[in-house]
Length: 99
Image (cartoon, rainbow, N blue to C red; front, side):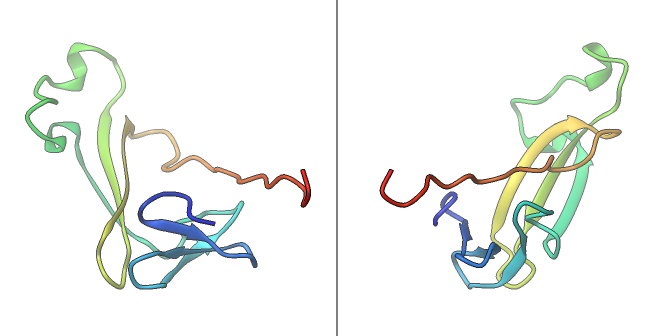
């Protein structure tokens, strides 16, 4: 099952990169367990994120990115408080066959 343009969930629950078939993790555990991660200040997201996070919140905010460790395609990006877990868990629930 294709999750998005970069990630696929296989029947055995393994999450893989659609570009190179590299195993990234398992579902519903950490889908990006083996991915390469990069964290930067939120302003690294580009010109649309210019103001320091301190203008809006008391918590530090960062840009988090996850890449396939084999082909280096960007798999996911989030701007979130740095004191929160990265890439909160997600789960895919399939409808029973014939539904």
